[in-house]
Length: 174
Figure 1 (cartoon, rainbow, N blue to C red):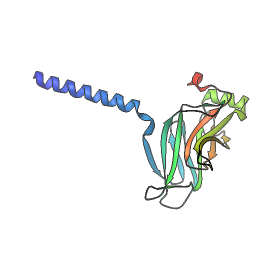
Figure 2: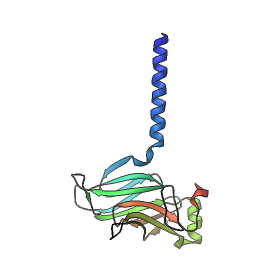
Figure 3: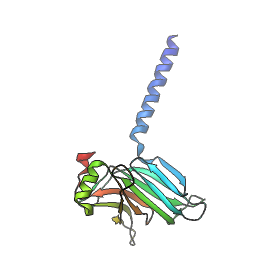
Figure 4: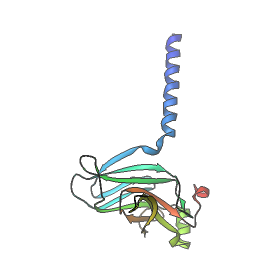
């Protein structure tokens, strides 16, 4: 009887340690979605596919934790890594009409209404010289989407995307 209790206790400790380790290692849980017309929600961000490209294309979304940010820009804590892949899982350029969106919070919307040009969707990707740089993606506010609106841009390339602001310090509001 004591051996069974000791075995269960050891098993429980092992399960707890594994759960804690996986909880701390959350940045790279990738999910692959078929590229079909509709919305893919990932919490406060996601994709809206208006016109899918050719059949067999999938995209991979990865929730990424924040790393270095553009100069003078504060980034929301979680971004999205987007990669279009073919049926053989090889990376290809984006195709179709696919929007990346970030649902705004009440604080973000208040600041956006005061300083609309202080918000942008930023992406981290190699430039023509193959040097990774931050680049803003032209964004539009969709008022009827999300509780406080949705900032969206057409995905120009495979990259890691974040919502950023020059007027809002995310370290205070998160």
